Structure formats: structure tokens, C-alpha cells
Image (cartoon, rainbow, N blue to C red; front, side):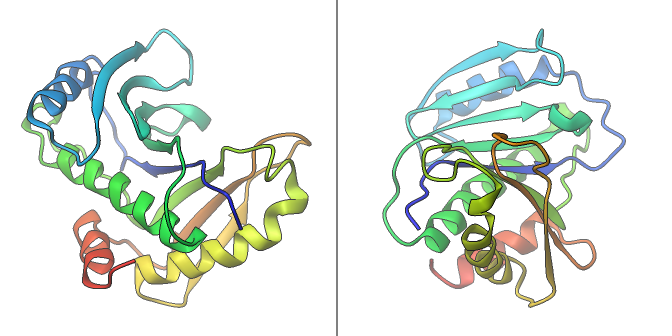
Length: 194
């Protein structure tokens, strides 16, 4: 599979009472101190868009946003360009970047204990040319399941396709059994190189 552009979203644990404006200053701080191993460029404020991307951190390699889509608040990491390696290794690398950002936000004192649910994530194919509709879900599902098994360290992983309309981007909710911390997931990824 040659899919290179996709999104991964980890959902915040409810209740979420954080003021989205705080992410503007936090993301500017990340740019100043090179908090992520990417070329961080700018911050964009889309809080005026209902159920939209909220506040975005723009980098050369990705867009990171505090997304409110599907009425579920969370961190969305969108890979923009090509990556080296197999589809599974690209998914694992993207998961690691998303989880690293989640970990930074969980440690951020200005967010008053914001936590993310590591037990599930939303995977969205962001390339309609290579995966134009739901007919493309079978090969994506097989490869995604392989990546999820490495992430969670277990075989009990469920993948539910959440795409329901023709010509929607392919979206899959990946779930593990039970609750898993962001730190544990990063540990799983870092103990075995992808």
C-alpha cells in the first residue's frame, strides 16, 4: 500500500473543560523550544469553525489540531507528506508523533490535568486518490490491525469502519480491550523500532 497521508486522533477523557485559547500560547511555546522533532512553523486559530480543527500547530511535516469533530474533543495529527518505509511503519511513526504531542499536553500545567484515552484512536485516510471510497477498506484494515497490535502489544484489537456515506474519507475507529495510558503506548512503540 502506498498511502502516505492520513490522520490519527486520540480523544480526550471527559469531562473536558479546557479553554481552547490556551493552546495558542502552548503551541507558540512548542515552536520556540522545538518541543517536537519536526519543523514547527506557525499556529492557526480556527475556534470559530463549529466542530472544527480548533487551534492548529502547523509544521512542515504535519498539522496538529485540537479537534472537536464528531463532537469528541481530541488531538488530531495529520501527516502531510511522504514517509519512508512500509505502510505499517509509517502508521507507527505517526502514532508515535501523535502520542508524543498527547504526552506533552498531559504534562502541561496550564491545562489542569487534561488526559487522553489511549485505549482507542480514530484513523482517517486523507488521500481520496489512493483510497477513494469504502471499497479500499479491506487492505487498509489488515495493515492497520498489524500496526495496532504492535502499538497495544496484544492481539485483541477491534477496528470499526465509521465511514457511512459514499465519497467520505475512510475512517476507522481502532480499540483495544481496557484502558491504556499514553505513556504505556509510547513505551510499547519505543521498545521495538518501526
